[in-house]
Image (cartoon, rainbow, N blue to C red; front, side):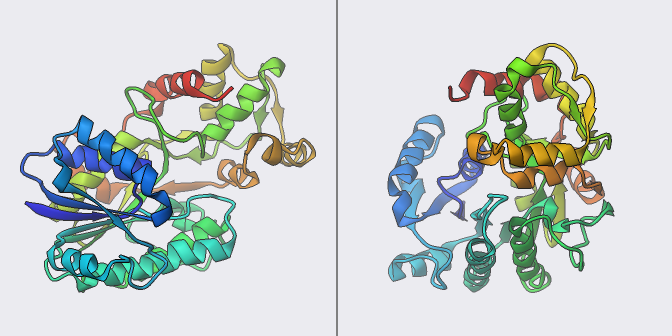
Amino acid sequence: MNHYVFTGFPGFLAGKLITHLASLPNQIGTIYALHLPTQHDEASALKQELLATTSLQDEQLVLVEADITLPEVILDPIMRSVIERSVNYVFHLAAAYDLSIPYEVGYRINLLGTKHMTAFAKRAPHLKRYVYFSTAYVSGRRQGTVYENELWHRVAFKNHYEATKYEAEAIVSREFGSMPVTVIRPGIVIGHSLTGETKKFDGVYFVLKLMDQLRQAAPLPYIGRQNIEVNLVPYDYVVEATAYLAHAPAGLGRTFHLTDPFPHGAREVYRMIHEEMFRRPPRGTIPHVAAEAGFSAMKLSERYGVPRELLDYFKHQVHFDTTQTMRALNGTGIICPDLKDYLPQVVAYYDTHKKP
């Protein structure tokens, strides 16, 4: 039996990872789900949901008040000592994911939080693996192919989220060789590949939200002529791959791009979404410059919650190499599906569950 610590609870991916681990035989002793004191009600609700939908018993899923921005992390000193002495696997998922966060917020949560969690994991005498959730976009404004064993660069970043996640991964990468580390770099995570299910309509869902708001003007034009790769991955692939790599010898001491090995271009993704929503293709093209000007003039960020920073991801050419990931997952049956095969489910789930 193994004992686990999860940050990022009661977040969506943390809950799905716990659900997946609970399905593996003889895997779990105790899961300590770290959450902010202000999230007690949400954490309790998710715990009850997990107890009802998995084989976990009440004593196996323990809610622990914590704050990763503090050096001690776990607020109760006795609980902190108990967990440090027993934990085998630490999954650090907690982060400020908003593309528009101020640097100070990203620094405190992403950088300091990772520094404190890394120190916490390093103190654990029975640690088997420290699994750190980064992002493929630590590459910033790099162009061309980015390899999994690459991190360091002097290129600028598109936003403070990327910058602080890069600085956070740098903290973890310095521990390769002194700690049993696995670094996970997902692409843009979207809904389940079979059901389209997700918790929040953020990230690429802003495109669906914007198209939905402009439905009366359809068919809509393409934005720009560049067919930049857009790297979308369903959450079930990320969950299954992470769970496997966290326990397999092949995952030890390596970094993995959990990205689409054969991503579609931005125009193709835009066309597929447009055809799913409106049953007809886009018509015409407007330049990126005009789209950005219209974005500001129409105050789309304020009206629809669409972050201006999102546009950068549709005009920056980068390819994430997945050789290491493909090699490690070979023979497991864990494969990233083609976006065109599950995008209909993603759009249908959005259409059914969007807020009026």
